[in-house]
Picture 1: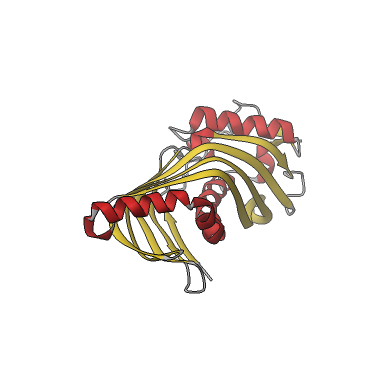
Picture 2 (picture 1 turned 135 degrees about the vertical axis):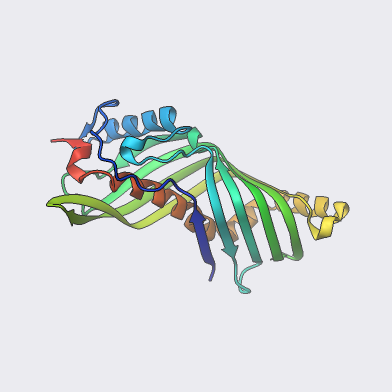
Length: 246
């Protein structure tokens, strides 16, 4: 079994009350087409700045303090890989295509389908272990880039009563990823041995699909924790009924 620890640096949850933004206009309950447009407008206009009015943090680039991936000995990819003080770059290339849920009854399954053209994890790393048949070790700077990924997010809404009003907590959160391609580049592998490092980077990229098959659940959990925190922050700002037109 794999173990994921993912700690993202986010803006503090704002306590200053503000009027719910009217641009873009709020949608009717369960209006999937309107909600898709609403989210895509936010991604297009607010990725680089965030939006204090709805607790949306800056998402591109998004600082990630620590992301740790550990695969056990029972996996062909048996690694201990830690990204520290990295940046997640590319969330602004997200496009949402379909949304289900978000009706008057918030305690139901909600589903969002989206794709992302390119997303990269950039920054310092350390790694040790074995990838398929080869040992690997190193510490330096890495670039892990996912291209043309189809994604699905699901979660269950949990009603939280506060000051006489109902807010939605985001629970049972799951993220599913299906990338067209993943690229890896790690500097300073094997204590800076260029030949070994170049060969390992080539091996990782030549075998990216087999590697992804082994670490898929771990990567989905790691990215899911980051995405979960973003969505949860947004829904802590206002009572659930403030997000929709009755």
